Length: 148
Image 1: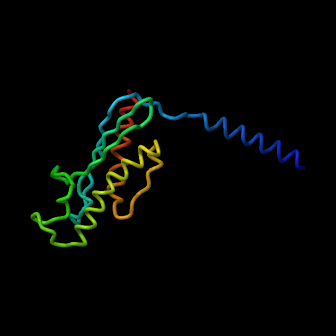
Image 2: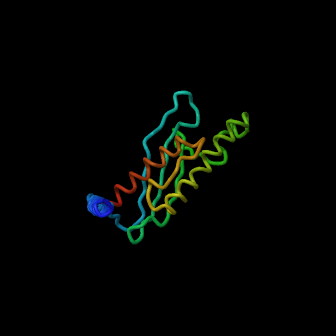
Image 3: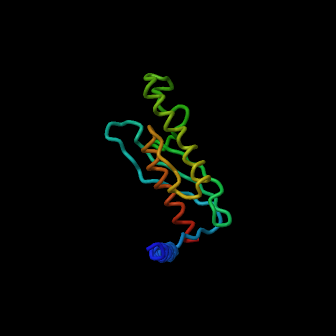
């Protein structure tokens, strides 16, 4: 019985190894690629409005640098002023939430470089829309890099 289990394990391991080779990983050309997400529009006019842009640097087929920024529908960057009304913090909770989303941009970019692939980047609570924008923008940039 033990011999059959070992044989079955070996057969299954070889099958998995063979299947893992199918399709292969995408091959990326070295260079810097810009990607842009779809336009997101929050019907309530909240912080979901806008889009994201990413810049990826690939060297040796590996992502070596990434930056990610988000923008409001009108093209204004979501930065330290984002969440203010007329340059003033009118609602502290809203401002804090908006700034948490802005800060998540750097974390998403850093996680991508560390993980080496998009699957290794986790969504951050309070910045889910930014996460979706990041995913879209990175996929756009990687599509360009795969085309070389």
